Image 1 (cartoon, helix red, strand yellow):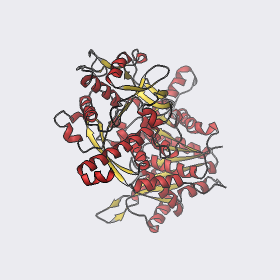
Image 2: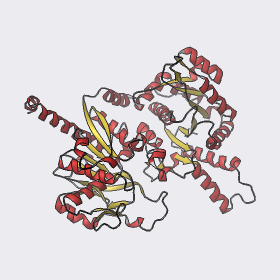
Image 3: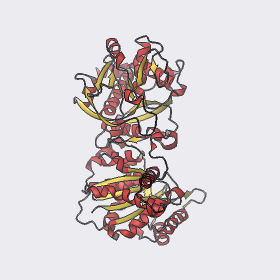
Image 4: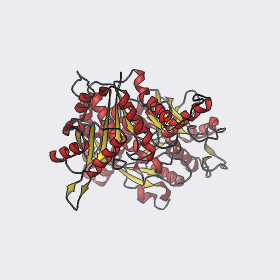
Length: 549
């Protein structure tokens, strides 16, 4: 039987429940236990697929085509195992299931209510992964903050599970904030006391309290929190702000969070934590030998969570190359021909990010042109790849009005067009090309060098594609479609052989990058950026250039 850990949050949102859940799972995994994590979100959207990135950050896509919360990206990056549709559940999905059952007559004659019908469905979903027999421990993160009206059914479901299950099979970890008042020069525990009291009023008592703090917690403060929140002093865990999220598992190891959990769940005979690879990664991350500056061209740059997986993939690739990757955000909406050189001249590489809609598209096309003409290492993802195709069509093939039908339905050269199977679809939610698809790579190409294999599988999230009607024109002009879907012929990868590093991909490679398996395109992109930076330095310093020769 699997054992269950529930992670709740108090005082404020965005404290890092997902990171704490992933860090705890990593520690338990490092001791030989099979763990997975699931996220329960209290919003009524069925999934975040139709949410603006400004509302919810990026939409993370799993192999099985689920559009999920971005925290699932953290789970995969920490545990190095793929998540699925079962790992993310929303209030919308819960209510949709219950209402469908009611319409089918499953509750015939009964009044359908939050308790027991909604809470029963929540409990069923919470226990689903544990019934597969693949995991020793299931960690469930409850979205939102204790006290939110919309999260009450989830908290009630946890209360019922605590009551129904043996004491050693279920526990609650509560993440809270200990604010530091600079004027008073002291940490305040009262918000934590209130959040625990509120949780207790709902019938759920935390077994462990993890305290986010900017200042160290002394023993007196820990004892005070333990006394007023009715937990043992050793169950009050300090979670100091870290310079990187990847330091958090080691900080939790120092605090003994995993040992406390193992004792509470009565798990014996566990191994010592094996974190050699993790520590090696952190060493490279913290002590880089070189530095590169990468421009991230996008239209959601005000919110870093909109490109969370891309930023984390850069961290993984930087560590492999023992290189610090500095990201410069450039808003595509404000790039023009007059200022593009000034904005991009100091970069060592350029990534054009994914997105939807016409806003900022022309700026992305201008940026691609600059990278192509100036031999600046270029990497385009999804819409970024499509912008590379459009730029090449306009400025090399000479088709001035070339465009995507997403932005211009009347273009005479629709080099990017709506996928055939998408043309009859009206509903927006969950109807894009989603999930993992195979791709066959052309031998001798840059993509083949990067992946070192002829067949790959990568995750997709798009409606528009390269228009194969124009493939011969692009090939004759020098742009190579080096990766294609074997079943549909969909162009997955384009590249320019006469450029030091120029590649665009229709899929989202950032979604599969983890600490233990950094995504290879990102790794080679940073390598190319390093070489570009070294050449720039050599040109500026002739003496260094002669030494390199």
